[in-house]
Image (tube, rainbow, N blue to C red; front, side, top):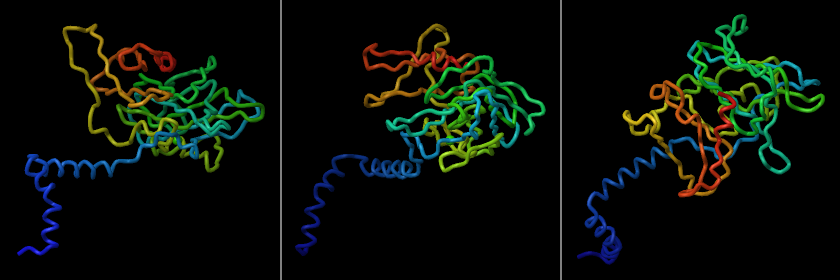
Length: 293
Ligand SMILES: [Ca+2]
């Protein structure tokens, strides 16, 4: 004869027993859910706000703007370099908004197989005129296709104010294929301002205004690929992301898979924010990125 306690437990479990009997496969689904939750718990936490306590690299101050400063990255070994992204350094402002600082007015990016850059090749040269202030947005240099171990950014005209001109960058990503090979690599410079906010390592520590747009590990998939339309070369194709709520967009950073897209990039970066079913505020972000092509 069941005791009163055993009877009460059976009655309490009765709805659960009915649910399992009426929904086939629920045990299997629960096992899948447990597996997914375990995998999710192992993923890194993505920061949606910039870490302003680690702003990146900053040079020592110079009295005059036309003072040359440089910083370079050792990729560890020679490798193909396809693209380079410069992410501005940001610091807190009195209005609590992230304020970009120190992005060079004029600069060049050079590659070398030697640490002293005795021989070098130019990846890009923006020293003949002032480069537009990118604000908080990344500047992406694509189509480099050179072989190098060292990457040097040399500023020839600095931003700042009298007696306080300097070079600052929040992060530099050097991509070989779809991998950022600069993260965690050794950084050297002509000089460096050292403080809790600024450090040489801050140039390649993965912390920037863009959060963590890339990881050092090889991605497990190639990303999104539209259906192939070999008979319709002029067909427009699109893909969109639902952000679930209205958000301020500071930057859109497309990443392309090298094997699938060996030629010119589709759409020339015509990235347009919009509202579902409308053409409201379809302001193009193409110009922001085209300046670095
Ligand atoms: Ca950084």
